[in-house]
Image (cartoon, rainbow, N blue to C red; front, side):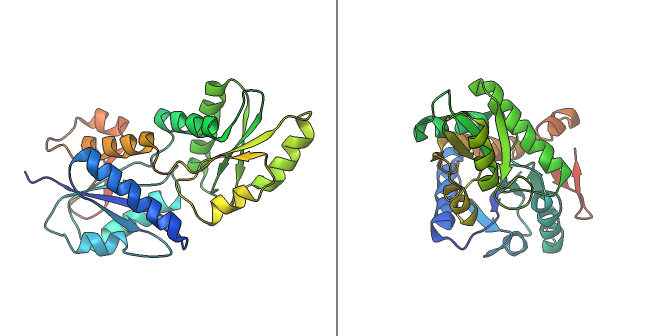
Length: 253
């Protein structure tokens, strides 16, 4: 069986720094897995997953969504691109989060920013109206709370309430003079990260970006999904691996 192509699918941004970061991340993953990793975007810029998949119809492909939670792009948009491409041999993994590896990355970013254990912490996500994605985000906030030993509240840069700036004001009023730290739960630079930096927090962490933990997580998703043998159904479900049926529709093994 031929080795699968590896395709990393991200959201897209008009910020060149954010586009470059995704490219750098793909490069790091490529080094880790020992083969090329292509990049596609579902919004703002191209190439799209449909375009890249349509150009390699005769080659199996593993697709990893570079999204930190479920939501429209992972649940609907990416499967629609796969189906529209006409590609019949695509293995799509689940979103990157929630995952314990990302909690370790969040903690590292907090430490790098100058966070102290007595600080009040907000976990800031892009936002979503999808109930499943919201559960993912609350799970991540709960795991981060357990890891740092203090309550972590959730706020949003776009869709959802409370907005980050409002949450910072509220937390500051309740914190008794403690510093307010915003932990960015974003993958790359862009409009949403700018909103976090403009929120009025005392500290804002960098996006998860090219942290080695993110690289290892994505590399693991590619390698686990790209094995040439079929995984037992229960194991594939645990690993969040989704394959494309002969009709082009996604299903879980």
